Image (cartoon, rainbow, N blue to C red; front, side, top):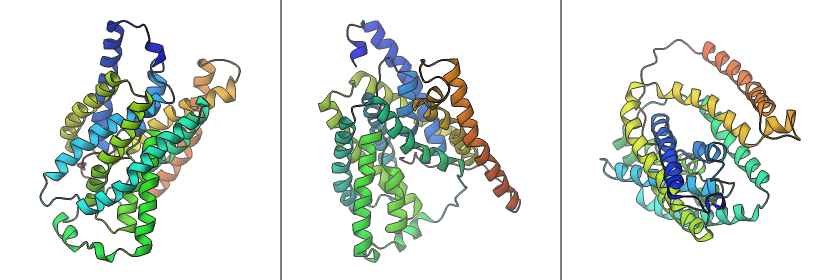
Length: 331
């Protein structure tokens, strides 16, 4: 936060309000399409708020936002009947995501070249964005019967070992990238442990509370978190999440997620400065760099769009109802 040293209180209030407004928008979108927000926060904080965030502080602050979302979502899931959080599994996996998160933060501090970190962020987050482009409507099962039929004794020793390794990797992604780790943990719970989807998301959010808390504590100890801005981001995301949860039943969540996947690829490209490296390697961010970013973006999304169009045409026509969305799925 060196850029803010000597700034007046008015400047701090202005930036905090701007971050809160941005976070409200992220919270609305996140809760409507089912993501935790880290995929958006880390690149946008680096691009839009470049005056106050750098490659170390942006993911650290994004992780605080993930902590707020995880707490709110976990409280909501805990109150549901039947309760979809599998407590024992959540606590066991958290034992491995916590050191993973701490290691991820430590690994980030070892990467001293800022541009290398930008590449790490972009390459790691790009698959998450691309996955949204292929989002499909999932049917809602009977949560009570699915939970009743699930049995922890069916998990083999090999599945346990693989799951614990996956939990550590999920925690590492949280500390390194400012995500919640759910991009790894949710598939681990579903594929390896046989969780129903609803229980996997809820349990992953529960795990994320411990993961994000550990990573945030380490980031604060390292001086990578400005508490004013972190709280502004977290509170804004909570407010936006409440608004988005009310708007979600009125929109088609799958189509919204696909559109968002198309859009978020552009700031990832911009964050990695690919357009600048291509068209204006010796200059600064400007018109040529922006043109290069857009051309690269079109080069990615047009083939994917054609592929999706081909897949849709091969499917039999069906009515597409408005699809409600659950609480944000951690990335």
